[in-house]
Image: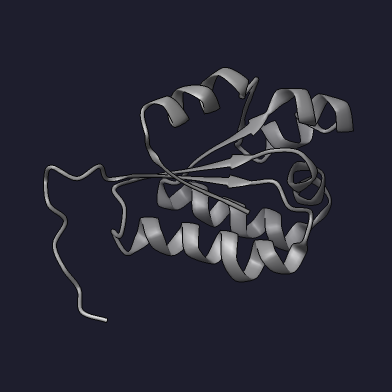
Length: 121
């Protein structure tokens, strides 16, 4: 596929909403695409939202945690839903990984209302 330059009029923000507790989905799609989207410049701003069962999986899986550290270092913005992390008792665990933990209902609504590019897994 041919590379093309982004039209300055186009939105250059990607939001990835990760809810799946499926480890293979995380490794082979969510993390791979999110990391490459940022490091290869496919999108200028890349945000990964960790929501629901994905937060529990992340809190328990060291390989995913190491990959997450790599994404944070690359400049991917990562936030997790506080209601979810509190319900699993893992808020501190995710914060120690460098993830911003906050209530996400309103921020997700704002993302949808501004018609940002959003993909969900």
